[in-house]
Amino acid sequence: MPNTNASFAPFTRSEALKGQMEILDSLGQEDLNERELESFDSQTKAILIRLYGQDHQYLGVYEYATLGEAEALVNLPESAQEPQSRDQPKKSLQQRRQALLGMLVEMQTLEAQEAKVLEGEDREDPPIG
Image 1: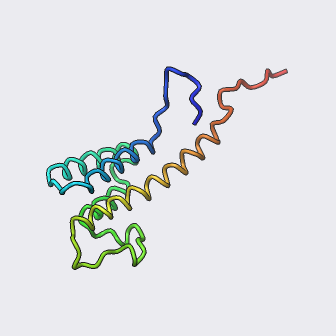
Image 2: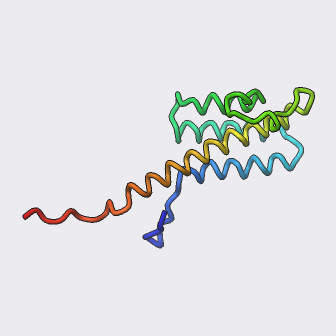
Image 3: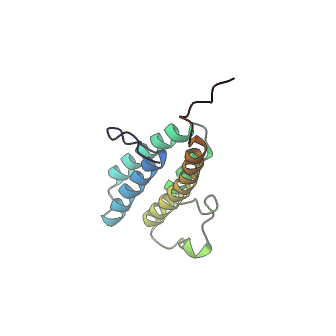
């Protein structure tokens, strides 16, 4: 999206999802702190509600991801699904990331379509004769 006003940088909805993914990546590098993870989940759910609305299916997908049970909902390939014997917290982090990535890709596609549709919207119609 072009920045036509140097004093205003447009904020895209996908940036909110990217920001959450960056935070999630940093959480995965550290020992998992349950409080930080709960705070992250609350922030993420608030963002999803703001972006999609209270009743959107993505809230459910994210909730399942927090439980580490979202394989079927986000269509993870078998190879990406960790066996049950593996670390459940790491599995839920991976599924959170997969869920957010799917949402991000979809949002970026929608934003690109919106930008294309809105191109030229600021032009005036020709005068009617």
